[in-house]
Length: 153
Image 1 (cartoon, rainbow, N blue to C red):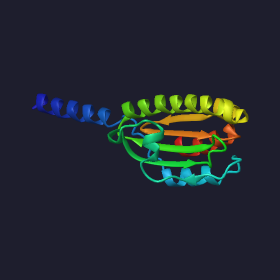
Image 2: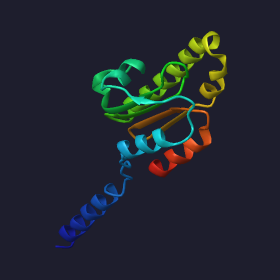
Image 3: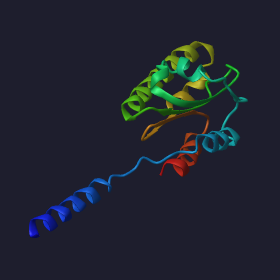
């Protein structure tokens, strides 16, 4: 009887410890995108792009992305907002690397086209929170980061 009670208690303890793992925070992507897009931190007018454009811009496999939101400027600036919900943290790490590559490619493009955009790209915010990757290129990275922190922290 004591062994059965011990086994039951040990199993209960094991299950309670296993359940204590931190669950990834769910981010309201629509609210975050809306708040970022409405912030007065852009010189350009940003428009939401159709589904599928994010994966193309960020060289992501469709199987790695659950959902994406992309706001992009007119092309006269490097300003953009990208929010990706990836399938898992491994896909999010890949998306983060691709975001940095995208930003470096933008620097190359804007270097001769509109060199005044380079500081925005140098200060781009790339934030990973669990399965989410958030990228903001704007004239005010600290405000963008503050908005993001409200949703990720």
